[in-house]
Amino acid sequence: MRTRCCIAGGGPAGMMLGLLLAREGVDVVVLEKHGDFLRDFRGDTIHPSTLELMHELGYLEEFLKLPHQEVRELGGQIGSEFVILADFSHLPTQCKFIALIPQWDFLDFIADHAKLYPNFQLKMKAEVVDLIEGGGRITGVRANTPDGPLEVEADLIVAADGRHSIVRRKAGLQVDEFGALMDVLWFRVSRRPADGEQTLGRITSGKMMVMLNRDDYWQCAYLIRKGDFERIKERGLESFFSDIASVAPFLRDRASELKTWDNIKLLTVRVDRLRQWYREGLLCVGDAAHAMSPIGGVGINLAIQDAVAASNILGPMFSHDVVPSSGHLRLVQKRRELPTRLTQGMQVFIQDRLIRRILGSNQQIAVPLPLKLIQRWPILRRIPARLLGIGFRAEHVRPV
Image (cartoon, rainbow, N blue to C red; front, side, top):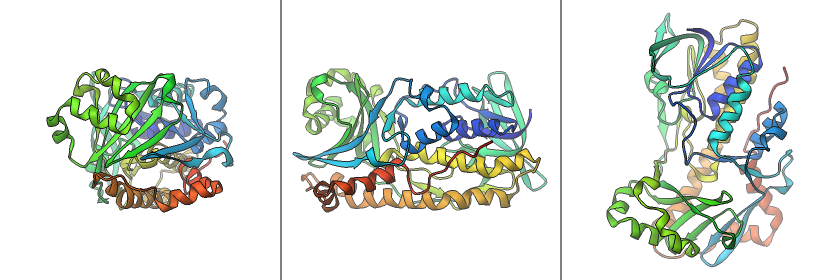
């Protein structure tokens, strides 16, 4: 195959970039290794910055017809004290809330709209396994498909294949790792009306869990020390659920819903960033360029912002038949590196100053001073709302 841009990976960054480039009239092929988007326990939080992009594309009204929940405040239970962490009602955006939508619904929605452009192709069950190089640049990819090997030649290859990116490894790009002291166990349990509505984090006596209200069930993220999963499994499922019930006592009678360890998915947390996001003929975006911690749930939205920036910078070049050079690709990194550094710095700070204390002790921690100030002066809740809802640099869709 021959195309202008080939994107490896059909996640949020890859699909959004594919849509935006197709919208600019660029021939684009997206290669996705799975047969569908149905992976559970992905980032299901669509933040106000992404909803703003949907508005700019003219999709917002249709998008919000998908089943979803709206989070207008974020709260936390620290011991016996409940605190409001963020209030999104004052954001300068169309939607002043986080939308909880399964990631497969989001990706299907983007794919359906991208397929309306004749110059867009999405090939499922096409796993990129190698790069093609020639003349000092990357000129294509090799992929495995059910119909046999596939080679795609392109003016630009975009790696959007996640934190375990094959493309960035094959390209030999250098990665700086910033350490992660935790992993996350994802699972779901049923939700009952008496449980309450609040989407929140819960901290009690050395344990921490985030519970997302998904209407008829709770999507739960239980934090553990890095590499502790095997030890937890050795203690047994009953002991694990006892730990869960100590954090959220109202779940105690739902232990039978976690029948086996297959109901619990391990997310191995990484925080890293490429020193250089590109080579001649290749650009990395999203988790392939910078793996994010799950803190704040901002990874999906940062990846989408990368895609918008890449489209805004590279789309006009493609439209004028210019093959993007490494100098052009450097502009994308320059645009997105500062907000990435600031976001990762904030995540590492929270990890080292708060989560380390929680997971490293069996004692109940007191409400940290910044949260006490937020409770005393509610106007301060706008600061974390801005950081979570919009981030350090919001991108906007370029009119075409």
